[in-house]
Image (cartoon, rainbow, N blue to C red; front, side):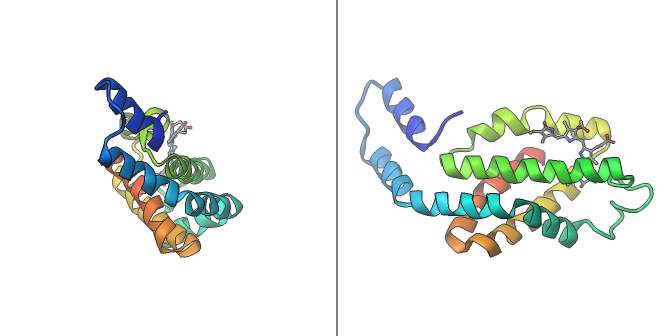
Length: 161
Ligand SMILES: CCC1=C(C)/C(=C/C2=NC(=C\c3[nH]c(/C=C4\NC(=O)[C@H](C)[C@H]4CC)c(C)c3CCC(=O)O)/C(CCC(=O)O)=C2C)NC1=O
Protein backbone atom coordinates (compact mmCIF):
# COMPACT_ATOMS: atom_id res chain seq x y z
CA UNK A 1 0.00 0.00 0.00
CA UNK A 2 1.16 3.51 -0.83
CA UNK A 3 0.06 6.91 0.40
CA UNK A 4 0.44 10.41 -1.00
CA UNK A 5 3.82 10.80 0.71
CA UNK A 6 5.43 7.49 -0.24
CA UNK A 7 4.08 7.89 -3.76
CA UNK A 8 5.93 11.20 -4.43
CA UNK A 9 9.05 10.05 -2.56
CA UNK A 10 9.21 6.78 -4.50
CA UNK A 11 9.06 8.54 -7.83
CA UNK A 12 11.73 11.06 -6.78
CA UNK A 13 13.92 8.22 -5.52
CA UNK A 14 13.66 6.36 -8.82
CA UNK A 15 15.24 9.42 -10.46
CA UNK A 16 17.75 9.94 -7.64
CA UNK A 17 16.40 13.47 -7.14
CA UNK A 18 14.99 15.65 -4.40
CA UNK A 19 11.27 16.34 -4.69
CA UNK A 20 10.58 18.81 -7.50
CA UNK A 21 8.08 21.66 -7.49
CA UNK A 22 5.10 19.61 -8.53
CA UNK A 23 5.89 16.88 -5.99
CA UNK A 24 6.07 19.57 -3.28
CA UNK A 25 2.72 20.96 -4.43
CA UNK A 26 1.16 17.51 -4.14
CA UNK A 27 2.51 17.11 -0.62
CA UNK A 28 1.33 20.58 0.35
CA UNK A 29 -2.17 19.85 -0.90
CA UNK A 30 -2.18 16.58 1.01
CA UNK A 31 -1.09 18.18 4.30
CA UNK A 32 -3.49 21.08 3.88
CA UNK A 33 -6.42 18.69 3.59
CA UNK A 34 -5.21 16.43 6.42
CA UNK A 35 -7.68 17.62 8.98
CA UNK A 36 -10.61 17.36 6.55
CA UNK A 37 -9.63 13.77 5.82
CA UNK A 38 -9.39 12.75 9.45
CA UNK A 39 -12.65 14.45 10.35
CA UNK A 40 -14.43 12.77 7.44
CA UNK A 41 -13.03 9.35 8.38
CA UNK A 42 -14.36 9.84 11.90
CA UNK A 43 -17.83 10.79 10.70
CA UNK A 44 -17.92 7.88 8.26
CA UNK A 45 -16.83 5.29 10.80
CA UNK A 46 -19.41 6.54 13.31
CA UNK A 47 -22.17 6.30 10.67
CA UNK A 48 -21.04 3.47 8.42
CA UNK A 49 -24.05 1.22 8.98
CA UNK A 50 -26.48 4.09 8.32
CA UNK A 51 -24.60 5.15 5.17
CA UNK A 52 -24.78 1.63 3.74
CA UNK A 53 -28.44 1.26 4.75
CA UNK A 54 -29.44 4.55 3.10
CA UNK A 55 -27.46 3.79 -0.05
CA UNK A 56 -29.08 0.35 -0.34
CA UNK A 57 -32.53 1.84 0.32
CA UNK A 58 -31.99 4.42 -2.44
CA UNK A 59 -30.62 2.10 -5.07
CA UNK A 60 -31.55 -1.53 -4.47
CA UNK A 61 -34.53 -2.06 -2.18
CA UNK A 62 -37.74 -3.02 -3.99
CA UNK A 63 -35.93 -3.39 -7.31
CA UNK A 64 -35.45 -6.56 -9.36
CA UNK A 65 -32.29 -7.22 -7.33
CA UNK A 66 -34.25 -7.99 -4.16
CA UNK A 67 -37.13 -9.87 -5.84
CA UNK A 68 -37.14 -13.62 -6.48
CA UNK A 69 -34.60 -14.33 -9.20
CA UNK A 70 -32.60 -11.20 -8.31
CA UNK A 71 -29.02 -11.53 -7.15
CA UNK A 72 -29.83 -10.17 -3.65
CA UNK A 73 -32.80 -12.49 -3.16
CA UNK A 74 -32.51 -14.72 -0.09
CA UNK A 75 -31.13 -13.32 3.14
CA UNK A 76 -27.73 -14.90 2.55
CA UNK A 77 -27.20 -13.02 -0.68
CA UNK A 78 -28.77 -9.83 0.68
CA UNK A 79 -26.30 -9.97 3.57
CA UNK A 80 -23.38 -10.60 1.19
CA UNK A 81 -24.36 -7.49 -0.77
CA UNK A 82 -24.58 -5.31 2.37
CA UNK A 83 -21.23 -6.68 3.46
CA UNK A 84 -19.69 -5.81 0.07
CA UNK A 85 -21.03 -2.25 0.36
CA UNK A 86 -19.48 -2.05 3.79
CA UNK A 87 -16.13 -3.18 2.35
CA UNK A 88 -16.32 -0.53 -0.37
CA UNK A 89 -17.03 2.21 2.13
CA UNK A 90 -14.32 1.14 4.55
CA UNK A 91 -11.60 0.69 1.92
CA UNK A 92 -12.53 3.97 0.17
CA UNK A 93 -12.15 5.65 3.58
CA UNK A 94 -8.67 4.12 4.01
CA UNK A 95 -7.70 5.30 0.51
CA UNK A 96 -9.10 8.79 1.22
CA UNK A 97 -6.99 8.98 4.40
CA UNK A 98 -3.91 7.78 2.51
CA UNK A 99 -4.60 10.08 -0.43
CA UNK A 100 -3.78 7.17 -2.73
CA UNK A 101 -5.85 4.41 -4.38
CA UNK A 102 -3.26 1.63 -4.29
CA UNK A 103 -4.92 -0.12 -1.34
CA UNK A 104 -8.04 -0.51 -3.48
CA UNK A 105 -6.13 -2.33 -6.21
CA UNK A 106 -4.44 -4.61 -3.72
CA UNK A 107 -7.25 -5.47 -1.32
CA UNK A 108 -10.52 -4.86 -3.13
CA UNK A 109 -10.29 -4.92 -6.91
CA UNK A 110 -7.82 -7.73 -7.35
CA UNK A 111 -9.92 -10.53 -8.90
CA UNK A 112 -13.23 -8.90 -7.97
CA UNK A 113 -14.64 -8.53 -11.47
CA UNK A 114 -13.95 -12.20 -12.15
CA UNK A 115 -15.54 -13.25 -8.85
CA UNK A 116 -18.64 -11.18 -9.57
CA UNK A 117 -19.00 -12.52 -13.05
CA UNK A 118 -18.57 -16.13 -11.98
CA UNK A 119 -21.25 -15.71 -9.27
CA UNK A 120 -23.60 -13.69 -11.46
CA UNK A 121 -23.34 -10.59 -9.25
CA UNK A 122 -24.32 -7.69 -11.53
CA UNK A 123 -21.41 -5.23 -11.69
CA UNK A 124 -23.53 -2.47 -13.25
CA UNK A 125 -26.08 -2.56 -10.41
CA UNK A 126 -23.24 -2.60 -7.90
CA UNK A 127 -21.78 0.51 -9.54
CA UNK A 128 -25.17 2.24 -9.18
CA UNK A 129 -25.31 1.31 -5.51
CA UNK A 130 -21.78 2.68 -4.98
CA UNK A 131 -22.83 5.91 -6.72
CA UNK A 132 -25.73 6.21 -4.26
CA UNK A 133 -23.30 5.64 -1.43
CA UNK A 134 -21.18 8.47 -2.83
CA UNK A 135 -24.16 10.84 -2.55
CA UNK A 136 -25.12 9.68 0.92
CA UNK A 137 -21.52 10.03 2.13
CA UNK A 138 -21.16 13.53 0.65
CA UNK A 139 -24.38 14.53 2.42
CA UNK A 140 -22.82 13.49 5.70
CA UNK A 141 -19.26 14.80 5.39
CA UNK A 142 -19.79 17.90 3.23
CA UNK A 143 -18.61 18.92 -0.21
CA UNK A 144 -14.83 18.94 0.14
CA UNK A 145 -14.49 15.58 1.87
CA UNK A 146 -17.37 14.19 -0.17
CA UNK A 147 -15.50 15.00 -3.37
CA UNK A 148 -12.39 13.30 -2.03
CA UNK A 149 -14.35 10.18 -1.04
CA UNK A 150 -15.94 10.32 -4.48
CA UNK A 151 -12.53 9.93 -6.10
CA UNK A 152 -12.02 6.57 -4.40
CA UNK A 153 -15.58 5.29 -4.68
CA UNK A 154 -15.38 6.13 -8.40
CA UNK A 155 -12.07 4.28 -8.55
CA UNK A 156 -13.84 1.14 -7.28
CA UNK A 157 -16.57 1.66 -9.88
CA UNK A 158 -14.02 1.92 -12.70
CA UNK A 159 -12.42 -1.28 -11.46
CA UNK A 160 -15.79 -3.01 -11.71
CA UNK A 161 -16.65 -1.64 -15.14
C1 LIG B 1 -12.49 -6.81 1.11
C2 LIG B 1 -12.55 -7.20 -0.30
C3 LIG B 1 -13.66 -8.16 -0.67
C4 LIG B 1 -14.69 -7.94 -1.54
C5 LIG B 1 -14.97 -6.69 -2.29
C6 LIG B 1 -15.47 -9.16 -1.62
C7 LIG B 1 -16.55 -9.35 -2.44
C8 LIG B 1 -17.29 -10.56 -2.65
N1 LIG B 1 -18.64 -10.57 -2.83
C9 LIG B 1 -19.08 -11.84 -2.97
C10 LIG B 1 -20.41 -12.28 -3.12
C11 LIG B 1 -21.58 -11.51 -3.30
N2 LIG B 1 -21.69 -10.18 -3.54
C12 LIG B 1 -23.00 -9.81 -3.69
C13 LIG B 1 -23.38 -8.42 -3.95
C14 LIG B 1 -24.44 -7.88 -4.65
N3 LIG B 1 -25.44 -8.51 -5.31
C15 LIG B 1 -26.30 -7.62 -5.86
O1 LIG B 1 -27.27 -7.90 -6.58
C16 LIG B 1 -25.95 -6.24 -5.49
C17 LIG B 1 -25.96 -5.31 -6.69
C18 LIG B 1 -24.59 -6.40 -4.85
C19 LIG B 1 -24.40 -5.55 -3.57
C20 LIG B 1 -24.18 -4.10 -3.88
C21 LIG B 1 -23.80 -10.98 -3.51
C22 LIG B 1 -25.31 -11.09 -3.55
C23 LIG B 1 -22.89 -12.05 -3.28
C24 LIG B 1 -23.24 -13.51 -3.06
C25 LIG B 1 -23.42 -14.19 -4.40
C26 LIG B 1 -23.68 -15.67 -4.27
O2 LIG B 1 -23.01 -16.36 -3.48
O3 LIG B 1 -24.59 -16.12 -4.94
C27 LIG B 1 -17.94 -12.71 -2.92
C28 LIG B 1 -17.98 -14.21 -3.04
C29 LIG B 1 -17.73 -14.90 -1.71
C30 LIG B 1 -18.76 -14.56 -0.69
O4 LIG B 1 -19.97 -14.72 -0.94
O5 LIG B 1 -18.36 -14.08 0.37
C31 LIG B 1 -16.84 -11.91 -2.74
C32 LIG B 1 -15.39 -12.39 -2.68
N4 LIG B 1 -14.89 -10.07 -0.76
C33 LIG B 1 -13.80 -9.51 -0.18
O6 LIG B 1 -13.05 -10.05 0.67
